[in-house]
Length: 69
Image (cartoon, rainbow, N blue to C red; front, side, top):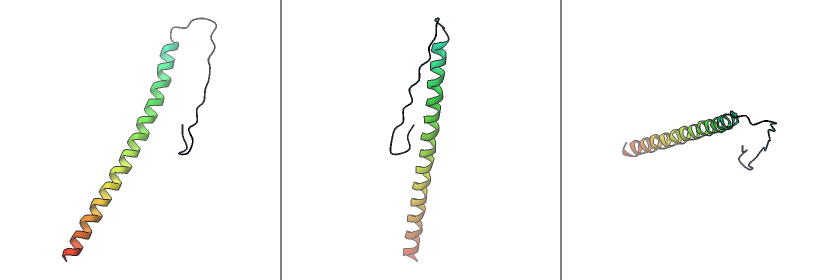
């Protein structure tokens, strides 16, 4: 997790008295949920960048038409 300036890391442990074969599934689920969050953030960032590029193209097109007139 980050706030744009710092990276935050939270470490946790889970103790178990006996071997539990589903623990690997649980760990993979945690990883998958974290990855899904990263994908969502990347998509949001990508959409924002595309919007910015589109606005720049429209502005450039507008200025070119204005110069011709």
